[in-house]
Image (cartoon, rainbow, N blue to C red; front, side):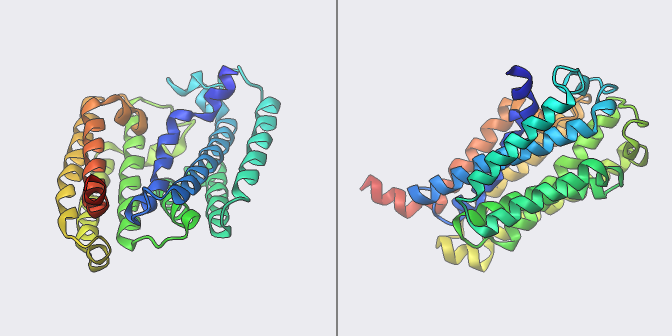
Length: 294
C-alpha cells in the first residue's frame, strides 16, 4: 500500500488547513457542530486534492522521470501502473462524492470548480506563463471559500485577498526552486519563460501585498465590529516575521522546489505559525476564554 499512500501526497494536505480560516475568524472554533462539519470538509478536500495530484502524476509521468526528485514518485518510478492509478482515482472520486453529499451545495460547487480547474491545469494551463501561478493561487482561494461554504459563514474579502497573495508567493517560489534544480525545460516548457530576477520581483510584490492586505483585514470596520477589538493588528508581527523567514529559507535552501516541505522542515517557522495561531485565538476568543477561567 505504500506506493498508493505516496500517490495521495499526504504531506501536501497541510495546504487544506486553509479551510479552517473561516471557522477561526467567524468565532466558531469551539462550536462542536461547526468544527465537525469543517473536519468533514477538510477530509473531503484532502481526498479531492489527492485525486488532482494523481491525475497530475499521470499526465506528467514522462517529465517526472527526468526530474531529480519527482522521478521517485509512484507512477514515474513504475511502482504503480497507469490502469492501477486510474482505478485508484475512481475510488477516490467515489469517496469524495459520498462525503460531499453530506455538505452544502455551495461547498460541492467550490470543490467541483477546484477539481475542474486543476484538471485543466494538469493538461494545459500549467504550460502558460503566469497563468500556471494564478491557477495555483485560485486553488488556495477556493479552499478558503469552501471552508466558509461548508459552515455557511461569510468570509472577509480582505482575507480572500490575503490568501491570493500568500498562494502567489508560494507558487512562484516553487518555480524558483525548479529553475535552481535545473529541471529539464524541455519536459516543463513554462520554465523557459521564467528567470530568477523576474520571480524575485513577483515574490517581493506578493509579499508586500500579503502583509498589507492582512494588516488592513485586522483593522477593517467589519473585523473590529465582529471581534470587538483592534488588537488583532498585533498579530501582523508574526506575519511579517514569517514572510522574512521564508525569504531567508528560499535563499538559503537554493535546491528546494517544494515550499510545503521547506516550511514544515523549519522549526522556527513552525513556532512562528503556532505563535500566530495562539495569539489570534486568544484575541478573537478572549471573552469566551475569560468566561471559562472565571
